[in-house]
Length: 428
View 1 (cartoon, rainbow, N blue to C red):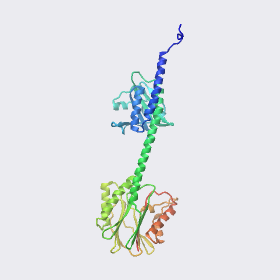
View 2: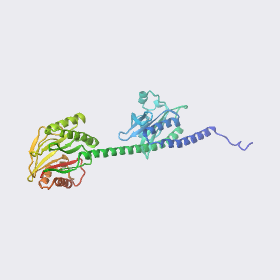
View 3: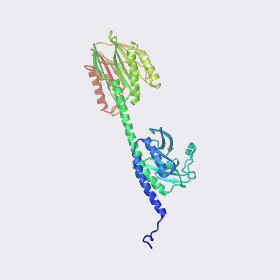
């Protein structure tokens, strides 16, 4: 009897061990493949191809979990390069096998789908696909659900088994990490894109709210704006016209964020073009600008706009206003609010003319100053602003500094939600 005669070989056990070694080798190889890209579209395509390969199935899916809606979202890559993703369908938490797995955070397999009450046949009805067996596992990253993967209809065997579950769970662990890394990368790119867009929008906003401090003959002109926490659609400008007149505009589109800054750029450009057109009809200019805003920016856009022209031959300022600008005449130590204008979005119904005298100051403020709140929730209000102006100031810059100091003291430096703009014309 030979020395190996006592050995009995279980070929089924040997085959099992060979398959386990093969699978472990494949998992090591797969780990390198799925971590070779941070492009989500490419990653999803790779994962679904690998599932079909290692599980030897007809089909596979990867659904990402959307925390905001608590839904699973299946997306497919578009085009040969797979650079874009298109949403294919959504699964609510608890709906179908994938929804059950997402809800319970457990791997499950069923080998007779239509006999399982958790199975949702509506997707087969939509696609024409016939589901027999499903193996589904959650993708968990530090205990948090990232998504769900499914292997569907094994080939060359009747169904899934516990051995498949072990392999699938090992793959799911790798897959969860790769998907989460791709999400982190995608979010970082999105944050960088948003930062770039915000920087561009802030640049646009700064160009629409220039610091002005100059003198034209006997008129001193100052203008300044303090931006709020949220970027808005406020703008102003001073235009020096060919006939020596000085035009002043202050507007607000009542739209926050990047759209507000971009819309304000369009409307401000329209105001500038019309200012140099030679018209001395402020109400007409406002009406025309409103039409431009509705036709070329947004039909529902509500525009507030003050527009005035100071003629240098007789020092008469002619103005019209719709919305939020507050024109104040300071004469002889007394401030008067010139309450002439229409509501936000309405046409400026009339022009108002005021002859300015030596020593007068014509101040235009936006409602952002009036609406500043203190810690008790009280508004700064127009009366406090007028009293501060009545206290006196030596220059346009001094008037602006005084009003901004009033704002800071009253608000106790709380954050503001609105821009604050101040324009001062002073007759020397």
